[in-house]
Image 1 (cartoon, rainbow, N blue to C red):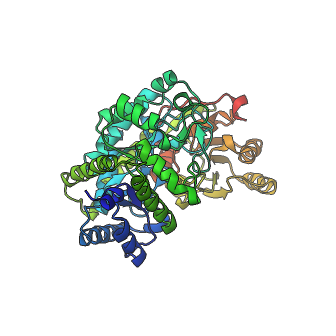
Image 2: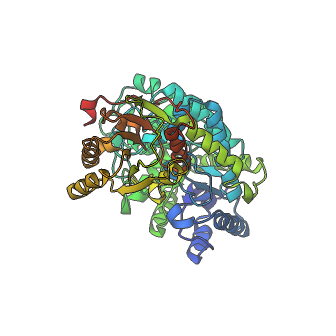
Image 3: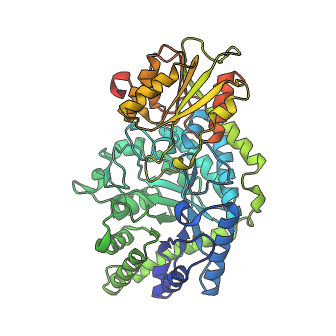
Length: 529
């Protein structure tokens, strides 16, 4: 393999464009001869038909340049983070699966994702997150995790991976060595896991061991520090030979492709230093560097890798070994099922899987006043107060969601009104919403990580003080459920996507029973507030 080809097979590019490849995108393919590309919602994605056309154009362009078939990757986790939104099946997400305790449902969820991605021409899914969300204050994982029990995360993660890969799409276990017990978001800076290796072996690593045993094709590194292995000034795992080569390769025995988390995250040095950190990542054992759509960054990384080989800081043998793993992944993909037809995307069979996950995940925390199921009299009114969805982290696509609880609840209770409030309501908004609430006989109040937002807590307390019976619903992280013990009933959905709100409406009306189990421990009230 020539040097340029070996370097190119270390690169995953991104570009702006939805309907055709721009000349700049063609030029990048010619210049860098990359292993593949990553598609992002804001850059590349509108409809299933459009995405399939785009991926076809990409593969045709690669073939015309004499390149091996491209890896085309996306973040399609389900739940909170979905690169594809319009037209696809809206799966409730990992923590909802954790509440079901069902490996079978995890496998079927993976099948749905794999089948739909195949139809779109996407052959690598940056999923699942097998992080163990043991830290309630974790700002970036949360409901992307299956829960806080390492064995449950391992079991469901392995089943999920097998489901994705059964459809000929490569799965990615992330974020190694485990991002579930951090209090910082590596999109913004360097997070750290301060535990000893014995604790990592017991909590963070079992899901990765299970993923490797399940045959996962890729593992994604985390941009977090592990002082137990790398000392006081520990680098991000992406730049650590101790973590990637000693721990992941030698101890855990992973032989597949190691892909970095996005190299434009702030835990990695940016600007003129990005090229040097890309070299350090390659030296540490990263096979694929996940780059942004910035042409300057792509050039920096390519030039830095080429120079590092010329200066013998990177060996051509190592480059070829890494490229060999990437080409082996492409060979695996080539031997899988034929591309699925576009008609499977969002099909009735897939929607039924999403509905089953949602219905089996709804969790009843308490029903102290026997308010559930809700049986309003014909003249009684129900007020639904919901936080307006927004992206709480860069790894979040919730802002695109339009709440639909009122629409579903009106099917059995016509006197329903839905009021949206800001994630962090101002005092004047709280006063107005409390006044508005007095016109209803029952209140259904949704929360969105209220345990982290004091003004949202203040709004809920103000509504509780009206004396109107309240059903409190934690729509995202279930830790909110411990905040409001005076609510007549408390439920958790782990998702605000349509299937979960439809399932919630069925529980509220008594059409189904809530059978989900909390996948994390609730906080004591004093710790929550």
